[in-house]
Image (tube, rainbow over all chains, first blue to last red; front, top):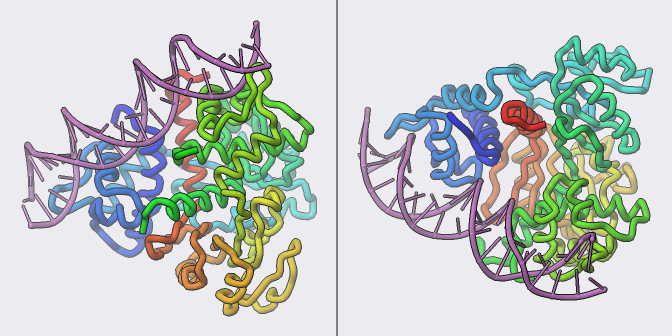
Length: 212
Length: 212
DNA sequence: ACATGTGAAAAAATTCACAGCA
DNA sequence: TGCTGTGAATTTTTTCACATGT
C-alpha cells in the first residue's frame, strides 16, 4: 500500500463503478477475468492493480465484490466523502444535479449556485440553489472540496477566482474556456470536443491496424 | 509520420484546443514553453510530440499557431470532419447541442433523436430532432460516425443496439450504465462520478507529497 | 542567444511466466 | 483445475543532453 500509480488509480475508479453494478445485481464474487471483460482491460493488469492495495482476493474463488469495492474506495478516497459545489444550473448543471450515478456515500453535491436570481432559492433534486455572492460562506460551511464550472464559458474565469477564494482544492471545468488558477489548485477540464475527437481517433487507429 | 502513440494523440488534442484559443486571440506564434504553461505538460514533451508530425516549427521563432493546429488536426483526424449523432435531448443532450466548443470544421452534430414525440421535429441550435425509429436511415444518410448516449441509464443498452445496427463506429456513453457492444465498436464512457473522483484523488496525491 | 528537433538514457507501465493456494 | 499474486522481462513513455537552424 506504499504507492499507487496515477493510471492504476484511474482504472481502479472504473473497477469500483463495475463493482457497484455487480453488487446491485446481488453478485457476491467476481474474477479478474470477468472484471476484464466488463472494463476492457486485461485480467493480469487488473490483478496487478488490485495487488497494489493488498491481498483481497482468494485463489480459486475470486474477489468478494463488496470487500473489493470497500478496499478500493478506502484506499483511493481515504474513507472521506467527496463534497462538491456546482456553479451554473443551466442545462448541463441541471443534468449534473440529477445525475443518477453519484453514490451518496462517495460523492455528494452540497450546494449549487446560479447568478439567475429567479433560480436562487429553488431546490433541485434535494440541492438548494444559492446566490454566487454567498459562495464563500456556503462553501466553507458545507465543507465542499471541489467545484464544478458549468456556467457559460465567458464567466468561467470569474467563477474559478471565486472558487479559489472560497478554499476549494479542485475544479472540474466543463466549459471550453481554459481557466488559470494558483498551481496548488487541481484543474480537470472535461471538454466534450476532446472526448469526441479522442473517441474518433481511436476508431481511426483500429481501422488501420488489423484489429477485429 | 509513421506512428503516433496513443498518449501523444491525447495530448495533441489538448494542444489543438489551446491553439484555438491563441488563434482567436490573434496570436501568430507560440513556443513550446508557452504551450507547456497553458496545458500543464513540459515543453520537451510537447516538442517531442509535435516532432512526431514532422518539422513544423522554426528554431528561434516557435510555431505558427495556424499551421500547427492544421497539421495536428490533419494528422489526427485525417482531414475528415467528425459527424456525430445525439440520442436523448434532455438537459444533458441539450447542453451538448448548444455546446460552444465544437469547431464546425472538426466536429459536427448532424442529427438528434428523442423518443419524446413532443420534441420530434423541433430544431435546437440548428439541429433537427428525429424519432429514434428513423435512426438507422437518418444516420446513414447523414453519414454520422459516432453516437452519443444522453438518455436515461435504463435505456442506454437499447440505444447502443440501435447505434450498432445503424453502422456507427464509436459510442460516447454519458450514462452511468455500461453498455455491451461488438468488440469492433469503440466505446468511451464519460462518467461524471469518475471524473470527480479522479480529480479528488489527484488532490489527495498532491496534499501528501511535498508539492507546492 | 534562443527555440526546435532528436538519438540515447531513464523511468514507468504493461505483459509474461510461474509460484502458491483452495 | 482455476484463480490470485508477484518478480522478471518487455514494451512504452518520459526525460535528458545536445545537435541544428536563424
